[in-house]
Length: 121
Image (cartoon, rainbow, N blue to C red; front, side):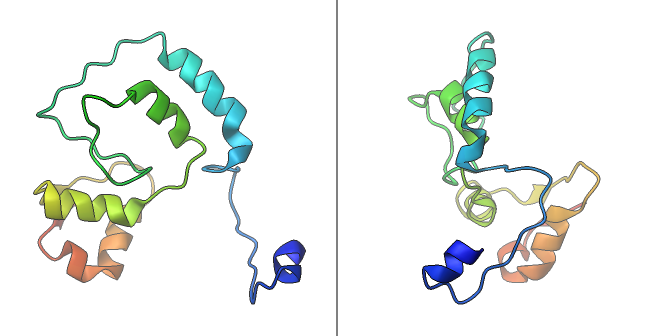
């Protein structure tokens, strides 16, 4: 934080995280994940649109899915843009959130105009 302030940042806040997720510090983990992903078969089906959080775009048949999945570990996440892509371009109107926290529901409540036509549970 001090370095950021020295370089002219007006404000620097320490984030409380359980690990250095989505940062270059996970490059070794990304490399190890890629080795494991190389061991499995991945079937791409054009009719199944899967949005990448790395760039908020659907996978294409030309994508190296294993490489992209491995890079997800250390890449920024574009959650808002991914949700917009699903709603606006892919026609998604229902989301089911699975997990201990309600991150998606909280996101929708904060961004009502993006999620006005979405059902969530």
